[in-house]
View 1 (spheres, helix red, strand yellow):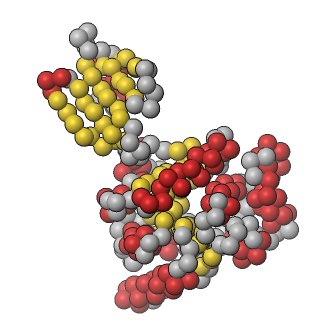
View 2 (spheres, rainbow, N blue to C red):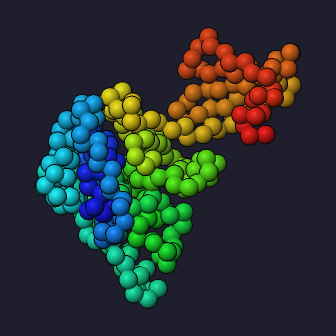
View 3 (cartoon, rainbow, N blue to C red):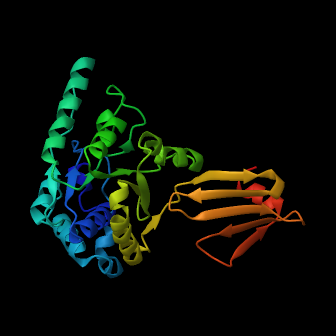
Length: 297
């Protein structure tokens, strides 16, 4: 996160999402992963502030964003002062790790450990890096300050917090994106994941890692939020987990992370029949050629 991003259309969606949790009584902790401003044009998407239909989505957040942009007060400290996210806890120490390799590692670890203490009373911790998740814990990677590390995500989660972190698709292919967005799921096999993507301006995704005991409560908040923000936010499919296959019956069954059962079956006429347990009585029938084409074969 950089101060120059404050008030951008992505910020509007982000604060509204976090505010949905705080208004539901969940104490939110924010680690800004704050980095210094640069000379790029990032953060320039503010034309939404002249659109009345956008204000209807969350007038409270909209008006705060407009005030910060109009008065040239774009900084995370001003967001904190605004009280926008009720009872939130913030960790705003600048992330600027310099020095030789051992020093960089020591300083990054020290910086992160301070955040654990600062945010210890939060139930949901939001991690807000410039770019997203680095797929390894490489302290010396180029631009490492712009990423969260997998071990940092795991540490928050294992400390008992639910976690949500920011990332974006960037130039990844859809196959690469599918692999990337689920990076933490194998590392935290007990997690209940949800991925929400904001589609205004640059694509921004928010990856939730939720403890099972909290999932139903969080799911309700997310569902209500999506009802209001369906024009800007969508939930991403997390993938299918194969649970059975019987060649004799020509049937393949998958169970999604939310428990939905998807069944693919070859009919006598060679067509592929698909059923979805969340849509009882509905069948989708496609030719094998078209089905394979959709899969990229």
